[in-house]
Image (cartoon, rainbow, N blue to C red; front, side, top):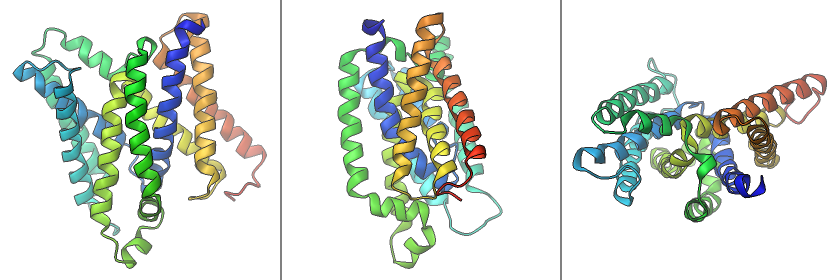
Length: 275
């Protein structure tokens, strides 16, 4: 069991660490589906290489994915506003998602393994992840995490207090672009391993759990998010092994159960720092 599950467990911990933190910002910004949109932009970039015979898992395809997420980041940064408008920001994100999805499907329909590429994008292949891939992703996440740490005051200000950030004269759109671009680069490493559904779960559920108990930007929120991810991933991997079930979907369901448990705890113990 250890030989089979150790690598997926380590990969899950890496994914929880980076996406749990991004999720706090995404929930605060109210752009819940930005992860799906950036993931589809990354998939569109990678699959576009098929038209010129670039393998989907090659370095060149990865660069195309990063470039596509950069376009998505620019769109989201340019369309975000602190005022209430007729067109919500989430609508723009949804449009980017569906157009990128449709375009990617049109491209992969011309590939010999088109249906398998679509399936891998959705559910990933985390059970079969290799240690070289883990090392590569760990290096990328460490570099991105270092940037997030160095610039955390700017990112937290723009996510949790956008009016105050604008009043200080910060270039909000530029910082938005940098945030979304770093997030998009993270997604380009995560989706080939875990798939869109699992990456979305890593992003949203731990952050929602943290928001249940704390007001942002409480220092304990990342700890709660990471703890939620560790419990859910461990339970999901164990259940997948014991009952021979697909790993990704089981982990997603485990996150759902952990969130239900958190809601129950919140209901019976309402006097928390979030009150």
